[in-house]
Length: 114
Length: 116
Image 1 (cartoon, rainbow over the protein chains, first blue to last red):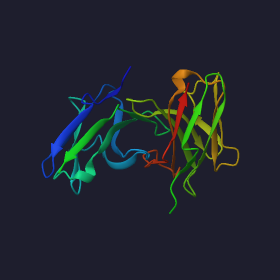
Image 2: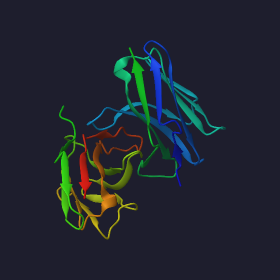
Image 3: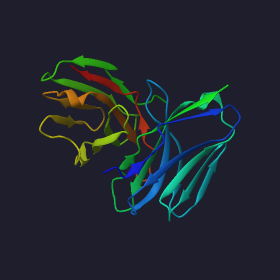
């Protein structure tokens, strides 16, 4: 049972344009969401997070939007740069968890073309 | 500040053999996690330690996997005997382990295991 889904395995955009990565979840108890970025041969690195009490969080070129009614979140990268080419993982945490356990999606590979 | 260290980076073994992975978390981090990432999937938590105690091992296949963090610092994950489906990247992560569960987890580079 995949509780966090990233239905697009890959995305290709032109440098300077917007990249939109999507994530859907099924568990209504998830209350905290994160995006991680992963380069080849490296571990994932934290990018940005959002709590369920918000619908938007912005950090520089990165913005995460949360639509709780649709159980959907998205990561916007504007403008996209070639260095953003990586695998992006969406992750979620359950409000009932006292351990902070993260459930990850399958990842979306972003390619930004110069 | 040094990041999470893992070794070895790559390992190839035959099925039914045993293998061990080592992780040294960021200094001062009380919480340590082991994840399994199978190709095409996201990381899946295997076990979580708070200092040297196990917090969550609900997804650890205990018939063949074991992990320890004896002194509350570095940790080892062992697979014995290995199966073909254990081929994956094994990621170690750590976090401060403070009073909030909403802590950033910092990941090591992972150990890529291939079971033949």
